[in-house]
Every structure is written in structure tokens, then in C-alpha cells.
Length: 511
Ligand SMILES: Nc1ncnc2c1ncn2[C@@H]1O[C@H](COP(=O)(O)OP(=O)(O)O)[C@@H](O)[C@H]1O
Ligand SMILES: [Mg+2]
Ligand SMILES: [Zn+2]
Image (cartoon, rainbow, N blue to C red):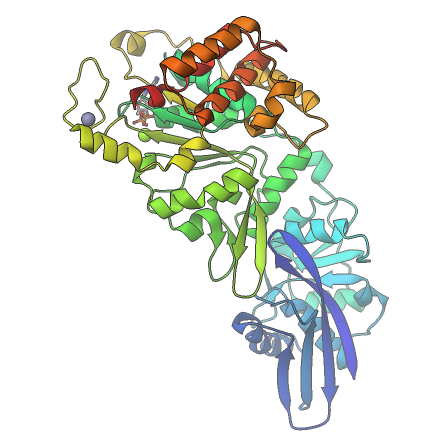
């Protein structure tokens, strides 16, 4: 007797439709799973066998073969348990193999007593089933703990199930389980950030630099002595980035779904992420991958901020590995079985002290580092990484007057509205090319999109010579000046815009 049921595997952030075929025939009793299962899928046998028995059903003493198709896709994890159990019950006539099964997708891990355990990636599965037009699934059955997350996807019937027995009763029409109403549109409201720029006293220059960075999606480096507020400022950057729209919210949530970081009580991530991995993190942790593939920090920071606090402390190989995602806005993780790609479009922010002791350049405190020590400290940042950082902002030690001053800093919402206006101009201007924000401009774009007033051109030439800038530094100044002009509502870049952009090259000048 042959029967089938459908399930879904996850590759990167996409769901891949999977067919589970069960054949039961005479012969020596056996139970095999074929079709490139890994060890975790092979363990399915024991879970399914026990769950079926403990739910009051039986398995025949026959030759049982389970085939997972497509055969060329390596299967991992425990989420096919439910589809395997359903196909087995259909093949043994304990469940009518009708339309209901043919038009449904089953995902979930079974525990030995037949109850269902939650899985990772429920939202990614639901979105993929919905997007994949030639897949005719109408209903998605999944663990009750995942149903809130999957119900974010409209137009797909989502049914949360708590046990195998309950599902069988439902499929036999003796018990009704209500589908979850789609919550996507109703519940959506961009979450408000809890940290605000208004809490940061003084540091007007650094705040302005971060406003410019946010307005053009430029990567930024904050440097200054310990305790000056670098970490405090960085944590508040998501609050001045444009409010995410629904598509962005779903993109962010989808990655967190695959990483298993959603809770059933808070299935939607409503704000831009801020990720700040420790400097001891491994390359796999940052970039993604590992034995069971998982998105790394660069992907968890997608559409938000990735912050490396004390940048020179990070391993060189980790900093090197950042280059690909910074260049491509995506990461490709190659594993033995498959190459997986995850989105990784984030704003990179780093912080560092000006020297190992932190006092270099401080008028009041003495720096005791030797020039070679300072050189070694700074050279930990490879040239290619620094090349991707358009804005270097100095965060000087806070003055005593500023500590006592009343807290009259501008709040994040006001800054954000200027950032959003500048981003609108960019979206409009770059409609025809593959550029979202000024940070992505290349030198071939400059002539058309970055017109310079004559005095601006003169000032740029002068600076170029007197500071002995590299061509790369020159390009960065133009990109940043473009953003400053956009914040100013100006189409032509003037000399004030260039002068401000030059300010954000402090490290080049110190160097
Ligand atoms: N400009 C500031 N306004 C208000 N508080 C500040 C400011 N700068 C520093 N602080 C306080 O000092 C603490 C240390 O700042 P932090 O951001 O960790 O400094 P850094 O990262 O530069 O070493 C912060 O938690 C904050 O309470
Ligand atoms: Mg800090
Ligand atoms: Zn020093």
C-alpha cells in the first residue's frame, strides 16, 4: 500500500516543498528512510514509531519504506516527523487518504507521546508556500506553538495542532480545529524603540555624524576615549533609521524565524534589529553556517545595525569575513551538502579607542602609548574594511559642563523625520539603477548623480592635495557630501557640504 503526504524543508530562508512517500509491502519487517536523510532525520523513525503507538494506532510488522523527494536535496532536522506519521497512517488505512491530505502541508516534530514540538522557520515555510505559485497547498498544519508566527501570512489556512491524535481526529472529521485568523494586517504596528537620542547629553558633532550616516545608509566608525558614550550612541542608531514598512518587518521576522529566535507570544519583530556580537564570536557565528545551518549575526542584523564594540579586539578573520556581506548585502554559506544564501543588508557600526590606553588626542589626559603601539592597534583594521566605512566620527570625552547641563538633546523622532526625508530623495533619484541609498554609489555614478558647484570642486581639489587623500577617500567624501546635500534638500553639492564631509575623515588625518 502506497500513500503520500507533503511537508516542507528549509534552505536558507526559503521553504522547499517536500513529498513524503510511504510504501508498505510484504517481506522481512523493516523501517527505512531514503532520500538523503541525515542522522537527525533518520532518528525520525524512532519518534514516529513511538508517537504512533502512544497515540493509540498501530504499525504493521511489514517492510516499511519512506522516501523523501526530491532526492537530491539533503534533508535535516526533525520537522518532517508529522508528515511521515500522517503518510504512514494513510498507508495503513487508519486515516482516509483523501483530498484533505493531498492539499495540505504538515510540519512538526513529534515527541514520543505523540504531542507536537515547535520547529524553527514556521514563518519562512508559510511565506514560501504562499509565494510559490505552482504549489497548490491550501492548508498548513503545524505545532500549535508555531501557529501565531505562521498566521502572519494571509491567504493560507493555518491550523495549529497539539498532538498527532488531535490531528487524526480532525482529518477524520470527528474533531474540528479552528484555523487561526490571519493576524498580519491587524496586528502590525512598527514597534517604537525604547532608547532615544534625547538621553545623550552634548556630543552634538557625533550625533550629527550619525544622522548623516543613517540618512545615506553609510557605515560608521565611532572613536574616542573610554566612557565618552560611543556604545550609548551606537545603541540608539536604530531609533533614527526610517521606520520599517510591512515588507521589511516580514523580511526581518523571517530570518529570526529560521534562526528559531521568535517566541509564540511575540511572533513579529516590529523594529529594526540592533546586533552587537561579542568580540570573541566565531566566524560561523558572525557570518552564518555551522553544522546545522543558521543565519549569522550579519543576517540577524538585516535591515538594521550590526555593531562591533571595540573593533580592534575582533579576530582578524572575522573582520575579513565581513567584506563579502558588506559588498553584496548577502552572505553565501557553503556547506558539504548545499550552498545557502542569507540576506545581510545592514548598517555596520564600529567603535574604537584612539589608542590602546584611550587617551591619545585628549588635551587633559596623557597618552602613554608608543607610536608603534598606536600603529599596531590601528592597523588591526584592515584597509578593505576601513574602505567600506564612509564616516569616521570622533566622540570626545564629555566635558563637565555637559554632564551638568539640562538634558535638552533632540529626540530620535525629530532626527528620524529628517533621515526619512533624505531617504525619499534618494529612492526617487535612483529609481532606475540598483542603488537604494548614497552609500551604494560607485564612482561611475558620480558624474550623473553628484553634481558639484564650482567652489565645491575647488575645495575638494584643495583638500585632496593638502591631506594627501587616496582615491578611495575622495570617493567617500563625495558619497557623504551627497547625503549631506540631501539632508539640506539641495540637488547640487556645495562647498559647505564638502567641508562637512571632510570632517568625517578624522582617522585619515590623525593617521
Ligand atoms: N553624552 C552622554 N550623555 C549621557 N550619558 C553619558 C554620555 N556619555 C557617557 N554617558 C554615560 O556613561 C556610560 C558609559 O558610556 P559608554 O557609552 O559605555 O562609553 P564608551 O562606549 O565610549 O566607553 C553610559 O552608560 C552613560 O550612562
Ligand atoms: Mg563602549
Ligand atoms: Zn594611549
